[in-house]
Structure formats: structure tokens, C-alpha cells
Length: 202
Image (cartoon, rainbow, N blue to C red):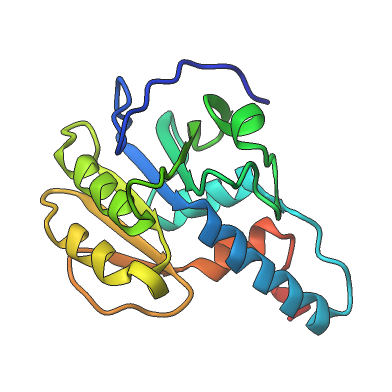
């Protein structure tokens, strides 16, 4: 279930009120990795892989990031190219109508979703870096889960994380990463769960 909510976002990310837990996602990168997994697993399992359950994916990321069931509040930000209007491999998908300023609640707490187009005056890596630093400056934020294109601007992500203090940061990537100031999780595991791929099938 979802509900309309207030939207207050300015570059890089400045909501009226921060949640203690924030998931920061490069939506274009997420879609690209999901597509690669779908193609590979459809060939391997010889069956169709349905679109991913975005809410389930967010749950898995939150759990991998250290969240446990309870009355938690989580903000999920999806950064995307202006030309991209929706996620291609997840449901719900449409940024403006189905994701931005919507929310859902489950046993982990309440998740509020925000989508944010990357304007041409700034690169995705720069916006991602600025967003991480903004999270670092927000006193209310305690836990940050980062899903960015480490192959393209990973050094910028790690440099920004390295400048944070007193934050619990988890970096999600498809392969192990070097660096300090963060714990790390393999992104593929949460995506497999969202795509309905069980370990028993492999």
C-alpha cells in the first residue's frame, strides 16, 4: 500500500526532515544490474524472470544494512537521468506517479520514497557525492545504505564516505570493494530476492 506524502527536495538532497535510515540509489545503475541478472538467470534457470518487487528489494537492502524489525523510519532516494521516467525491471516503477512522495509500511517500519532527476549541470557522480556529504552533515541520519555505480564513479563515492564521521555506512556492489569507512554487501543477493530467485534453484 502507498500513500501520498509531502515532497521537499532541493539539490543535492535536502528534505524537510531526515530519517535515521537512508537508502541512496542510482536508479539507472540498479536497473542495469537487474537487467544483467535477469538475462543471466533466465538462461541458467530456463524460465522467465518476472520484474523485481521494489519494496522487497528495499527491505532486503535495509536488512543487509543492519536494520531489524521495529518502528523504524527509512527514506529511499532514487537518483535518475531526466530522460528516464521509470524503472524498467521493477514494480512499482514510474518515478513521478508511483514512487516519488509515496510510502509503504511493513515489519521493518515505514519507508518513504523520493525520486530525483540528475540535471545536466551536474554529473551523476557529483550529485551522488554531494548527496553522501549532505547525509553526513545531517545529525538525524545514523545509517546510510549506498547503491551507486562503483564501476563509473566508485572513487568519488568512497572519497565522500571517507569524509563522514559517526555514520554507519554500507556500500552495496556486485564485487568486493576496497576502502575504509564502510561495511559492504553484495548487491546481487538483495536483487535475487526481489526477482524471486531462490538459492534452491541455483
